[in-house]
Length: 439
Image 1 (cartoon, rainbow, N blue to C red):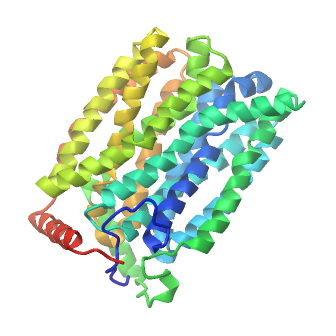
Image 2: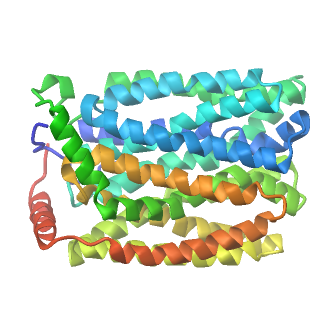
Image 3: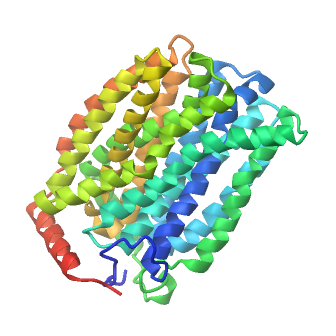
């Protein structure tokens, strides 16, 4: 790949004239809409459960389906990104990925609903594109913050959909639609939005600060070199440690997005709109929490080097686990809501800290590393989903077990270490970035 010399060393939120900031804004908007569609069905599950006569096991299977396919999609997207770039990749994902959102309205049985829920999960690969694109656009001194902010604001779609989809559903019912039709038409809303986002992404972004991949002479890797790069990434234990760590933070976010509304609806006897509003509070912390995690990672990296980024990650992950255990034991709504919010803050900070480390693992294969680590989040959600499908285990006990697991995983961060040469290279790049202000 052509050496990038014009990566942005600052995040200027109200500047839309540079390629870096256009990619910044359009990547988080695209991810936001994908999250909106990905979990749009979750706050409507109490209605769908009654219509289709779904059991707890079947609901658990649907939750697993929604996140399991994303594991493979993220791995594939990571490989594709290194070859054709984020602009074309995101365009295709947004437009093609909108299709099952329209088709899920045709479901009238558990089996067909499961198939479409599985297909919708593929749009979760959008996260990898967002992280890859901002990594290409921003210098080391702010790349953690850029990655965390675009991903965090994108993740807001998970909270937005918990609040908005019940309102869209209620609005359609108010217009005369019966409940069995209203939820089906409601799912078309994020689908339409994704189509327009795909068109905008193609028109207004570029792959690199200097232009698109195809405008530069790119040396194509031979099959032998490609296999060598793959083996190097797959053989790096740090990649798999981060895979597990991301499963312990983003995996928990996906899990809560899937079960929060039905949990508050059933456990605290709340109506659909109120349960959705409370569930939405969890996702709304993405407004600042993930960015805060990335910012802390960048600040720690500036003061203590790459090891500082890892230490912050481990500490935040530990706090996440503690608050999840505490939340699981809350039997009163008065305590459950603030504990949910505190748990959410540290979940998303941990995600931001993770991707403040990822860009420094293997610089020549950023897409592949991002894809593997990103897939870890969905693998974590699949493992969590197995707990929530068990008839013998209550949702609160499942949360308790997951909290203990997160505490245990936080210790694994100590296994992510960097060589003296990697530390030196990162320091040199940081010094260069702080002295250089690109146009």
